[in-house]
View 1: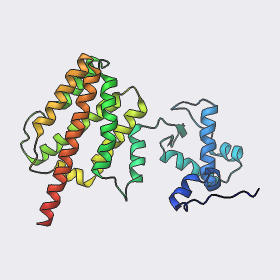
View 2: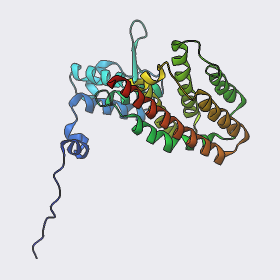
View 3: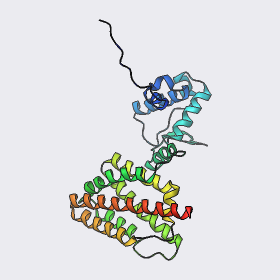
View 4: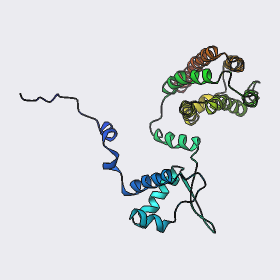
Length: 265
């Protein structure tokens, strides 16, 4: 019996990059960087621990000085190591921060930024789950910090600059919840959405729009959410957060349309 090959549609260049094994495309410095990561894991090095000297790494990996230096630069860019000059200097293991990782991922969208609907699709799916997880599990100091953030924007702004600061503080409230989330990956993904919003030119224009609306309604959602979080009402917290995200998306899309219409007049 002759085997037949099922015809499939051609694979795009982007798909090819996804399916090609990393070993085939990895440059020598990148391969060395991965081996240094393996060394850190194997030796169970912790943030602040010193890495071997450059000469030792060259001998260990049988690599040129320039290759090792480029590998170390890659790791430094990733936030995994830092260097210090002078007496007692050298290369040390670093603790990558979530903010640094978000900035690196944000660079991926530099030339093709997500739109508001894409960002809010993720926020609507994930942020209610954060609220549900946190209900009844926040310490008094954490609740107090959230309340202090709300107080930044619980009064009418006196000018456009203050209004912009208030809108950013509203987003900071949600970022604080994301940072407190016990599911670190869930919190990180929501924090990434907040960062993308902060960097989105259209969102910044909306935040600076001198004709804001529904500030009081947005505040009401957050006060209701805070009450549910304090009382441990998990399902209610989830529902309030989802309702809030639906409202926020409608508001942002409406303001985006209004600004576009003003430009076309």
